[in-house]
Image (cartoon, rainbow over all chains, first blue to last red):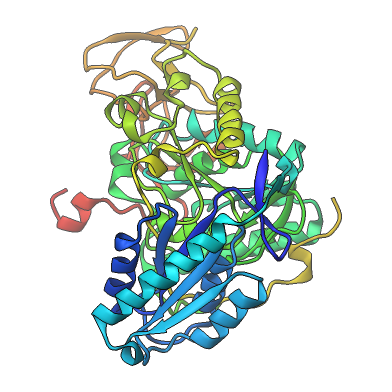
Length: 397
Length: 100
């Protein structure tokens, strides 16, 4: 396995140029630059809002200096609240080339697109000079999320990903699972798996926070499709989701944008701290995928029962389908058929090994189904987090 | 003996999970008892492994996933109509549209 070596010492499995807009008003211009650029390795991300928000800045900084990213073009309208100076300084400090265009100064839509295409061309040719070096599985960070869950998710796909996680962690990889709002009811079991009692306490608190948040909002993360697929309660969905974590000890609790410093299993707390200020913790699966990528995930394992077609900007998404009927219906979008567990033609361990092998192949450059289809969804929202406590990222193994 | 169409995920569980759609009227053998399925059960849905009493915890994956809101007979569909979360109410599209 080989990775693209960045100036900051991190290694990527993809070599992308990002075009990022800092407010929805700059979205069209940024999108046109991406659409008109000749390279497939130019991708679009952005932040829709205008009010400044520390969290969104932090997430954007982490995405733009992600190991899969070689260089960035920042597209600003000019009057938005986003701190574009700090963003470009952070990208520059990571050793990545960064260019900024301000639409209000550059002469509007046409001339900004023209200038952007020139800058992107330079960024792509700089990216192509990036050195490739040997990369070990222990340098890999892998996130997992479930979307469109049903009663089969917790039987086939999620435990298979859990099996894959166990194998990755044995190899020294860092693995991240989510999310506290979808782990309501599992808090005690998770606390018992924590590497220290202090971490166990923090895990309990994070799930309690999620429960309060969802209760105040009036909804859990339970969608109508979950019920049609046989799931009945938040905690039932949670137990199925929890199976993705495998059986390793939990080594740390992180918040979006915290990058694991060593291998092991990490729980990501995605629920904003304190009184709800910004709506639902994550408004869609892709919001959570972006957070896992902001925490350094090179790859995302996405399990589904009802079926989802999404991919992501920046990091490849491997889709593991739990439901055999869904797999048949959406096979062009699915990378792994975990429905074989339901039909009794494969064991969880066999499917888990298949996922593990595919992770190694995708990390070595093989395209996932969603990459082949051109999926590059991304969302960044408003949130607020306190700095993480020392008990949450333990240095002992 | 367990019917292939219904799996037991953990030995403490009091529900089976359906792995293959079963139509109403079909006979299955569960817990060494013959049983006629009363309503169609789809993949991913649950049926009761025992007679359950109102207020019982529903156990799946060896863990509680909610409580029954009425008595549920052995083999009966366990779903939104007869169990609820112990944490947060589950919302569905039908309920939101008032079409329940």
